[in-house]
Length: 320
Image (cartoon, rainbow, N blue to C red; front, side, top):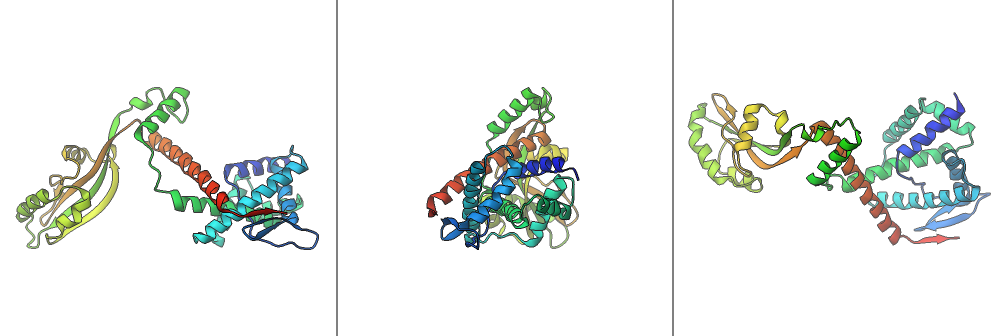
């Protein structure tokens, strides 16, 4: 396999993973000495040398001194991340690690075994590479477990991003991308009332009674508690462009926190919805979703950097 091409691919794979990694605590072995102790875990000169060999592939123009410094600081951060993950009981299974190896190999246009063979031929320890990939996977998992679902991007930031991309002509946006229509995003609960005697018309008085009791989703379960044979199901978020027009029109006419009119049913049931929230969203929704995800990812990794700063502030690091 072409060595220059593999070098290029490995650098691209390393940068695409975006985060640094960790090495498990180790102790000095013959021919090496302790360089730094991080919260009681020793990092040896041999580990630093082995990591420097790997980093030379990524930074071929750097001096040996610069590579050793980068390797040492990278390993320090890795130990801190490993300790934090252990404290929070976040782990990476062998299967997850194998998938990560396969992904790196695939990005380089090869197989895992061939990649390992090539690394060995270039003087790179498989353990060093394995520790690095495991750390990347572990840190990503840790960050996601802590911050996923806690990031909310304001509507105005999404629209501004769409406008900027539209002006730049990127992400498949045309000049009219922002004006491609406006949709409404609904947060919904489905409410199904079942007639015990099999005659759905007899449910109408109970439905009107229930309608008066419902005043928001927070109290929805309490409101339906006194009614028999009512099934409430959370449906999450749906946009008007993905709903049948009749249903979309009915939800548009239903105030937030209120029960809709009966939208469907049969001989023994009647189906309605409670609108927990509604908001107007602008632009092509598939492109908008990509823009929102990109902004969310940026925010998550901004929080991750602050998170690491907090971890470093608590750490005890002793340079030998």
